[in-house]
Length: 275
Ligand code: MG
Image (cartoon, rainbow, N blue to C red; front, side, top):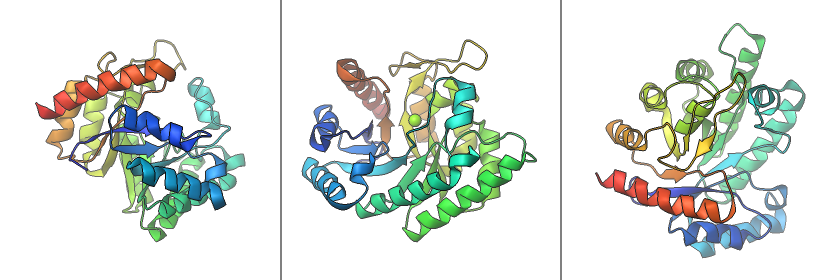
């Protein structure tokens, strides 16, 4: 893969060949897989997906972990439902994470990533220590698989995330930096955040978005170049911090609009990489 190759965040549906075609059709050679449905996590389903990926010629750079009960409707709902923060689902979600890490290993993928949920800003909050311990357990499991465990950004500020990574104290815990999430969650100016987190960034999402306009609301996602990230500065800053990994476009709409926006976004990003 070329340095700063454009990639795509891709969900896999009931027909994996058709899903993977979405990536080859827009001309990328690498993808991050959204959380694979259960049918692919074991047995013949896993083999079917593995074969479809091999046939597609795509490189899978990361597999994402996610959970069906999660909702991103607004900030209080995210706080209540996402990641390893809710106590009642935590043990089951850690078990599912291990299963997905093993699935990724079977595909030869050395990065697993997740929205871990809202890490409390206050380290004396009892939840803070619980999440530190949970991420340690997951990181240690991934280490046994030879994998990094990457934290998707956005739900906390960069200083909170830095402190959290230091408190977890595991070398294989890294960041999947999503500049739009920083904006959409109102978690801080993304370029500044990227500079603060630079030593921990293993992968990035190329996504755009606008700041929230109401209390507890999430900002909206926009096509690349139409939100508040500042794509030119984002790509320049990635170069400045020495990032050479893939630039994984994430566009969270569907159908023809998604395809159009990805093609236009890819053209924009490739031009900015050349500059
Ligand atoms: Mg993202």
